Amino acid sequence: MQHWSVKELQARLQTAKPVLLDVRETWEYDICHLPETQLIPMGQIPSRLSELDPAAEIVVICHHGIRSRQVGLYLEHHGFKNLINLSGGMDAWAREIDTSMAVYT
Image 1: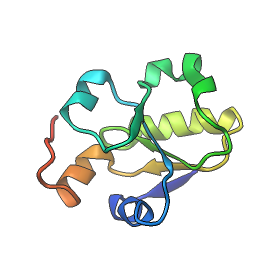
Image 2 (image 1 turned 180 degrees about the vertical axis):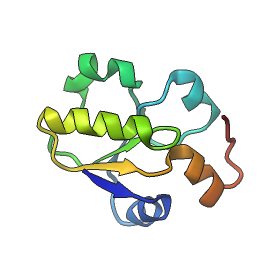
Image 3 (image 1 turned 90 degrees about the horizontal axis):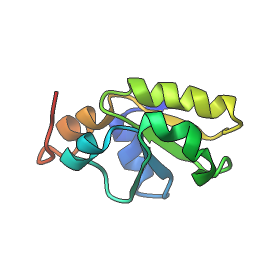
Image 4 (image 1 turned 90 degrees about the vertical axis):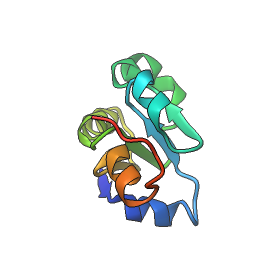
């Protein structure tokens, strides 16, 4: 699994459309999220694994990058190869890229 900063993801989104997998809870997603993001809360990943393409480039996103890392490790264990953990998560995105985005604790 790779680990990208929010600036690296921002640059990648200029040239490609990776799957953006948000693993936060619905209430967190409702506060702020990236456009065209697929929401599957962390606890639902095992039961919804079939909704994800193991061959796709998947950027796993959470609040700070901790849950997304755990989900990335789980996905790797299940044969996913092209995974990126968003270091700093949505909090970093809101503070460094889109400062108009809501933040939460």
